[in-house]
Length: 216
Image 1 (cartoon, one colour):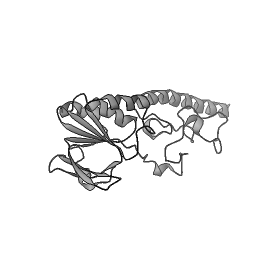
Image 2 (spheres, rainbow, N blue to C red; image 1 turned 90 degrees about the vertical axis):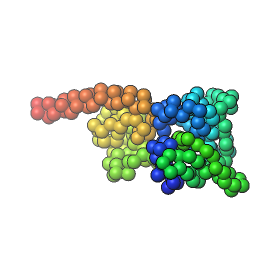
Image 3 (cartoon, rainbow, N blue to C red; image 1 turned 30 degrees about the vertical axis):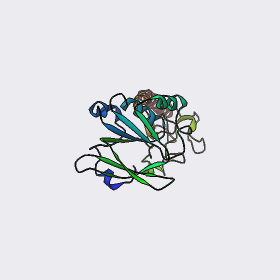
Image 4 (cartoon, rainbow, N blue to C red; image 1 turned 120 degrees about the vertical axis):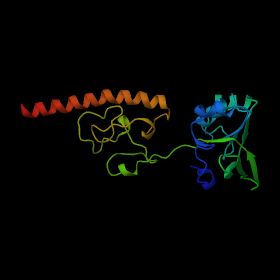
């Protein structure tokens, strides 16, 4: 989240975290703001520009090159309806029943400016809510769950290595955005889910085989 109370109040009323594809058609002829410097932000801006009269991308850093694929940077530069504003951050917003204005600040000068906007899409990354797993599963430095080859074998109780989407506890699987190394796409998460189902069946068969072996 941006951490701006005035904008949190307008969540779903012009302020969105993601959801650009679903809202784009309703913004025909409007001015739209996209906050972010990654591929998701670039793709959202290009999609919104098909409908909106103008799309402004707000980037806190010095350029897009460090965080966005070159092909997207080139497409955005060529898009006539897209404006990129570097070294700019969102500090406030206004609107009684729906977003009307986004207040931005120039990081170099400190000057603030009101941008009329019918909608703002924030795509600045994510933080996994995995604190409750910290004593149970291996996670990376950012809190994403380690799976498959990313799981450290230290403490792993089985002779076989972890399956592709298996976490550091045998029989526990992680898919989608919460997994270390995921591509943060709905289609990819759904695909991982289907793969994990097969792995669950394989694990259950393995457990059943061990029980039979112990009885005999």
